[in-house]
Length: 305
Image 1 (cartoon, rainbow, N blue to C red):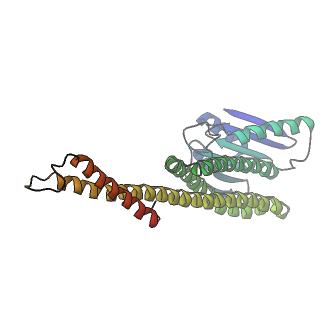
Image 2: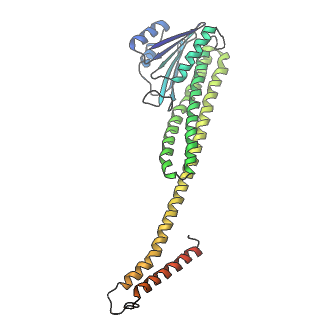
Image 3: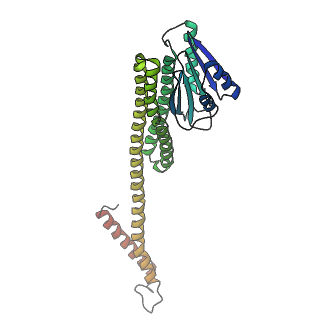
């Protein structure tokens, strides 16, 4: 599906899951290199940036999405072809930030507002800011989960939170891995954009790198928080298990002498103390009770209870 937007002299073409015929038309209209056109047909594993004959910049970025994904995967790929008076975005899933940006772009076109800029580089700048804003929302979603997990940990649900912490860890590590690849691509884009759009565009490329560093710092902060929560959860679990083991050990230590006494008085011997006395049963039970009482006092004295 192809959507086309125009603002002054800049044209934005947004393509979702392009067909061969759609790519062929784009090749003819915007003089796209055949190698680039071929890559548009299928998702690409790794991000990259290339400058083609001073005609356009080809940029591939992957944006992690857990809450706003519309497909089976968690990585949403966007291919950018940025010329001087056109920008083409190719994607293989519905990406909410681009959909919202299309509404802004339409409003600016209708009202003839000029704050978007005079060439496609400015359109890319505002577009990438929207995409990074969506990543910030994804981090807020993970932050809310960490807050909820922290509350559950201190409510005595340490065992249940082991799986939740593992799920959050998996998502954060995937988030970090996807975003970390942006650094080299954006640094290379800064060089290519300066050559393509001139030195006046340097502020915008620096601002884009600033957005990346802000998101990356947020990821690292949440990973540190996750590590602290996991260590706290493990400590509380270990303490609770130690308490259970202590109680079981005390019970075993208390019942062992009683079992020993019961075994002794159950022996088939010629003579046993108290056996044969009219109150022999109660005497033996009393001895066991007194022994248990003294063991209890001993444990209290040692502060084991």
